Amino acid sequence: MDLPAGARLRQYAAVKYAGLEIFPKTPEELDYIMPGWQEKVGGPTYYFGQNGTDNGLVLRVVATPGDNEAGKELLVTPSFVPLQSATTFDTDLMERYADAIANGAKAALMRQPKKPWTDKESAADYGEQFQTAIDKARIEVLHRFTTGSVHVRPRSFGSF
Image 1 (cartoon, rainbow, N blue to C red):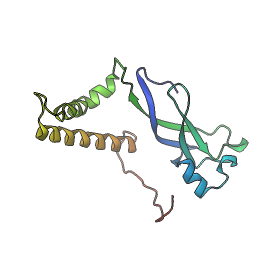
Image 2 (cartoon, helix red, strand yellow):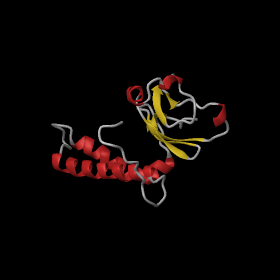
Image 3 (cartoon, one colour):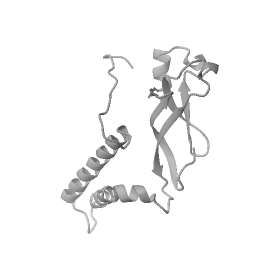
Image 4 (cartoon, rainbow, N blue to C red):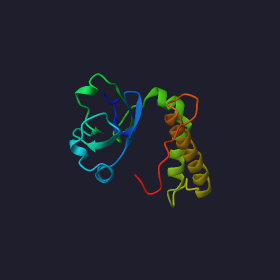
């Protein structure tokens, strides 16, 4: 996967294997629900991100695909964040989220104490608008930028 200029991979928003969603788990959760997961071979049902080199995040799927899994598609939806050193911004993202980004910046600036622009009431308003935009963006990702329902897999109480 090629990273956009001025960005780093933050996380994997979704992962599908052979058309089926696989689910994020930490190595600790895997130790609990699938002892010996490091040696399991077969169709992946879980994944996690692992720090790699060059500011990257390595995707690890569990179980490791075996010979019977050859040719099946792994579809990854990444989530990127800009580097602090970034000097450009993706045009599509800017067009879609310019107001939200501006509201977040205004909230952060207006929260600074003892500045001519300090305004805690306006900061709270802009912060609320920014959080609402973040929530809407998350929903868009869950919907894969299409209309329809979000499906949630139920989990038993106390399980991973």
